[in-house]
Structures are given as C-alpha cells and as structure tokens.
Image (cartoon, rainbow over all chains, first blue to last red):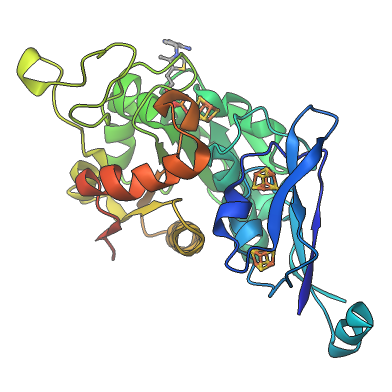
Length: 78
Length: 245
Ligand SMILES: Cc1ncc(C[n+]2csc(CCOP(=O)(O)OP(=O)(O)O)c2C)c(N)n1
Ligand code: SF4
Ligand code: SF4
Ligand code: SF4
C-alpha cells in the first residue's frame, strides 16, 4: 500500500494524474487553491497502489508517492 | 515510511510558467531525474533554447546557459571544448532546432561533437502563438496554416530531422520517444540516460527526440493532447531507436 502527497497550491488542475491513475484514487477538488484552480486531491473511497503514474505524468512535479510499511498500512485502516 | 517517487534534487522547488498539461514540465523532471541517477549534477552544463523553455535554467539545479534562437548547439560546442569533462546538453524545441538553428544543428552533429541534444517536438511554435513548425503535420491547422499544412501549396512536409541526423557518421545515438503515457515517460527517461551515457563514454553526438504535448496551441485539453500524440503524431514520427553504436 502507498500514500501520495500533493502540493495542491502548485497544482494547475491539468487532470493528467486523474486520467492516468489506474485505481481512480484521484479526483478534482471542490474548492480552489490560491491560484484559483480546482486541484487534484485523493478519493478516500479507493486505495493508492503506489504505481507512481500520477508522479510520472505531473508536469508540475507536485506529487510525491510514499510506500507504506506493512505496519503503517494497518494503522491507516484501523 | 520509505519514499518511492520524490521530486529529483536537480529540479528546483519552483512553480513552472508552463501551461497546464505542457510536456516541458514532464521533460524537465525526467532530465533532472536522469542527472540525479548518473550523479553528474555538479559536472553538467545545459544550454536552454529560445522558445517556451527559454527559462529552463530557472528550474534546473545545475549550470545552465542561454543561447540565441537556434544556436544552442554552437554554444554547447564552445562549453564542451573548453571543459571536455563536463556533460553538456542542449534542450531545444522544433522551431529552435529544426528551423532557425538548422545549420548549427547539422554541423554540430556532423562534427561529431560529444554533446547530447534533447529535442522537444511539439509540432508547432509554442512561445510565439502557434505558427507552423517544420515538424507540423500535414493538415495541421496553425496560425500560419489556417487551412491546414498543405505540401502542394509550398508549405512542405513534416521534417524528420532525427532521421536525417542519424545518417551522419559523427552521430552515435538517436532515439525518438513520447510523453503520452506513464510507460512512455519511463521509456523517455531510459533513452535520455542512454544518450548521456554515450556522451560520458566519449562516443559522439547523441540526440533524443521527444514527442511532447502542447495543449494550448493544439486547442485540446491535456488528456486529449496526450491522445493526439498517439493517434496522429506517431504516424509521422514513429518512436524507436533510430541509431545506436
Ligand atoms: C532571432 C529570433 N527570431 C525569432 C524569434 C521569435 N521566436 C521566439 S520562440 C520562437 C519559436 C519557438 O518554437 P519552438 O522552438 O518549437 O519552441 P516551443 O515554444 O514550441 O517550445 C520564435 C520564432 C526570436 N526570439 N529570435
Ligand atoms: S501512485 Fe498510482 S495508484 Fe497511487 S494515486 Fe498515483 S496513480 Fe493512483
Ligand atoms: S498532474 Fe499535477 S498539475 Fe496536473 S492535476 Fe495532477 S497534480 Fe495537478
Ligand atoms: S504554449 Fe505549448 S509548449 Fe508553450 S508552455 Fe504552453 S503548452 Fe507548453
């Protein structure tokens, strides 16, 4: 399991990460960031598999992907 | 927590000036990552083009110079000859490399300069508002070909400059890749790493052409622009290795 971190103020809302995420873990926000852009955010109903596709396609390099240790995975789901 | 994908240290923490979904941002990250992997950040010098990537040096965390429009490979030749131990590369658009800078490009390649050229093919002049580039596709509507590029009316055919350069004996490696999917983005990183490696091994001139989305000029959303690379651009510019030692 994995977890991503999005620098939402840097996001330009291009939606490439949303399009390429194979498990639909990303969606567009309802609020705007300080640039006035609807930014990418995670969907709590799905789980990140750590494939890195969002990181690879992001033109702003504003996504980080962190792999979780098994112990941390447990923590996130209790 | 172990990190799998993290912003490379050769890429500064700075917001880009590029349009949403622009390939330049993706390619800046790829180049930075390769430089980190090869551990050559302190021994690399880049030459930025004139075009949308004119201020690429604002984003890279290694030495960079700017060159007059099209002259990047001439400036890079000077840097490399004075400092042969540096890894020197140019980053150039299709207008920069294949129009105004054609002479500098062909002669640097023909001299077999030990340089790497990263050639960003977005089939248009982005910075100046979307005029036809030598690489624009037949039928492609641009600011200067409003009815679509037509060879019969003197607008010529898409110039396959990488294929032409691959014929030259001084050129050791030419590859064409695309930024249209995560897989191809990873492949682009591999080809750029190989091109740098050939330079470090003193094998000659290396070039990687990258088919790159320009959603603004193409008047498509970023996802459609990625798809246009796959459905239209690749027919004319098929990805692959055109030359390898
Ligand atoms: C000597 C000179 N001629 C013309 C220009 C105007 N000009 C600036 S960028 C550009 C074309 C850039 O196109 P390309 O190299 O494809 O890069 P892109 O913007 O698409 O990334 C032109 C013609 C200039 N800056 N200098
Ligand atoms: S790492 Fe993969 S699964 Fe996780 S959010 Fe990014 S694209 Fe989706
Ligand atoms: S790819 Fe990057 S810039 Fe584009 S929407 Fe996703 S996080 Fe934002
Ligand atoms: S005009 Fe095209 S190449 Fe230039 S920044 Fe915008 S999307 Fe990128």
